[in-house]
Image (tube, rainbow, N blue to C red; front, side, top):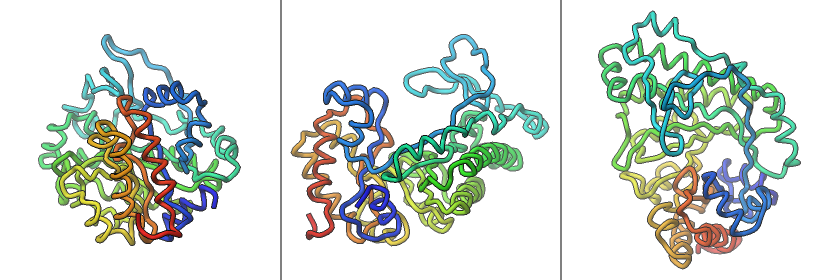
Length: 351
């Protein structure tokens, strides 16, 4: 069975030949793994048995001069600084009125060039499950534009202001993704979006606020993917169990980077409650197992997760974080994927 068929079987809650595998990695870990294993990019993906490949649009919009101290700028005018993606150093809409929101210089979807996407996807010859669409982190963008505490206050004090900003943000992301799908949707399989809605101890906002301010926009993106006959998978960190029923009701097909160390994210309970409706991707603990463990521990814990999650399909094996971090030993990542290859086969009994 080729990777694409394996992944789509899992999304359809059927048992393929083996559990599909996912390898999301930081640039730093990826560079380290290439050095240690002496492999190029594609050879490393093959070694990790990654069943997915991803294609991107290219930013061709205006270039902006950064303020002193800023390392980057989002298309929404938020400047950032710090390690990795960094933290915002300005909140452009912190004191905005509704008129200010209407007059704000929102980005043009045409700033993203989609002309090369189809060729990039076709280069894989249909062998892999192709991820496409814009990441669409509108919740994070709203936090950056307002400031987090300020955003929560405005949900109560100025809900129409929050509604307007959310609509502008999702209008942009939906238009970019639609352009991508018009250009190459026929060679894509999965619309991959991402918003972190949880902390270690629970959701960042309760079900009522989530339903009022965010869920309609998630449903809009999910419906967009389905209109192009794509599965829709969302990356979401943290303990988000109270929000999962609403995401399932909105039509979400897959939840990525399930973190079992977070409150409410017990794998057996999630599988029992939602396993026939929602594909789970991840679940192998990044911190306590992959970073701090030894290969033998990784093998044992990976087998344990497979024993819980693989029955009936609907599971993709991978780390519980969206990107494997640089401090993760390469030998542990190899142990995880090699264990899935050996014990994630569906023609044998549970591991």
